[in-house]
Image (tube, rainbow, N blue to C red; front, side, top):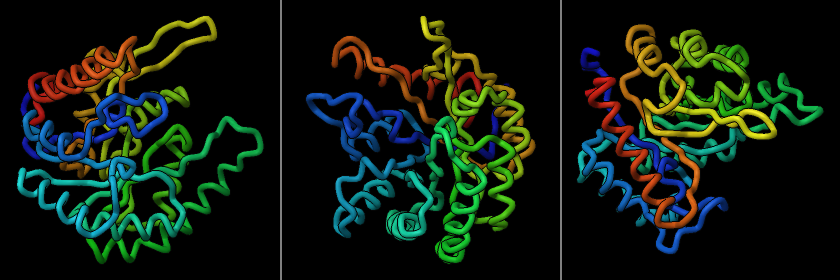
Length: 281
């Protein structure tokens, strides 16, 4: 595949969610911190990082200022990743992103569509109101808010949301694995969403047959079922995206040592695959 000259390559800190130990699924003996994460991104030759807000140890000025300085010292761009679309959270997070020097902030509505009595139209309407209330702030700071398909909205519902907000400062973050939760084809969904895409959680998923049905799980790029080459072609030709953000979540292994090694290997193999096979330079 020919090189994609307009795309930079970054890594979401959630890719190291097992090493960070900020989620209940796994608590390592020694936790990773954002400085080590930034060191890893620099060592792997990446162009930028997205910081999951749960990995921030503080929102105090000194901590945020030092973190921003460390990112800049390493020549990386930075983004912020949050969850939820209530107005207060969005306003606080936009201020935080501005202090970090982030020009992108990804988020999601975060509801479970499989729960009875969920009114998807109401969820969309509430999100539209919240995004409309903060889009002026996003524009003033030059921050694009990217709403992710987070196992909640289907592709057409996400397009409807973005159209209702109607600003270049609110777009879509396409998570390639999450389309499968709704049994949507990632290639077709990315094609439909292309005009609105401002960010990605670029990943690969594999499947296994369990006694209760099929299970989808994260793997290194190229080791799963997603047609990454076809999706990248759409992103290059049909969207205005200028960067690819990798998110490489894997499941824990039998031991702590094996778990941390598995996670790190999947990330490093994914960076290699993105550079050498997908030719993102």
